[in-house]
Image 1: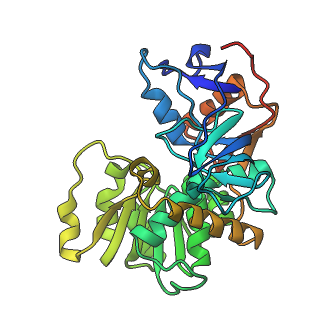
Image 2 (image 1 turned 90 degrees about the vertical axis):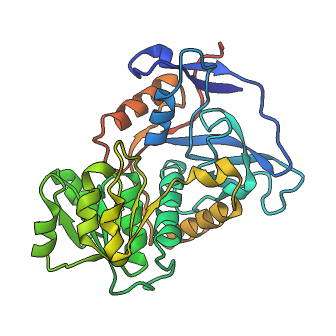
Length: 344
């Protein structure tokens, strides 16, 4: 089968960083399904994992957002059938979705939203899982329509993939959502996603929040530059509230600033479950809920860029370039067919 392999060349402009190749069809374990891939999305985790590869690393198959059709089912799988159209993020502990076919644990997947195209659906799994877990598991908000009315959430960097979904889910769940954005196009985007208040993260946040008549937030989600925004978050968080982040800090964080508010800090990393084998079925269940909300037109795709001339190394390299430029609004997806070289 055709695959796209990534190597230890950090500069994505170099063709050697990502090449077309071939691999044997993956074996299917008892809990697995084998999926024929039709669309993949590129996330910051793809670029970070590629950049971490060394020159000695054997070609790695990345890809952690996918849509496709089930072609084979493991012996312990009883809730999917051959031909089912599914979507998922998968696991960084196994080969990713940048391949014609992928073996993935069936507990991590769900039927794809019927209303969405393959490209629209492929934009959702990783970001929707991250947003759902951080909002409703780590931060403790209730995952039900209008269940958190009267509570305030601040999302720092609302126009990215996770922020775009988190705004929508939080608004559906009844929260009043504030988000930060600095450029006209990102401010327009977070407003479209459902943010009530929009603050400029290139300026001091506390005065802007005060001008909006907000004293404290019940939750603050940091999606960019945790070191830069932690102290501000500590000032703006409500007593017993939750500050959460998905972005690793570069320096030690001053956790003591949260002590007198008895506030909590939460890390979110959606691959923790699949990396360590913890509660895998919860991710399939969350994706099933995401598909339901998408089909009800409550949750909208965050797809903003599609490369539809085939899944190959050149197109995936172009998608990585878009993500690495740090100016993406929403998500980029590459759709099939696979049309790279047959040469390994």
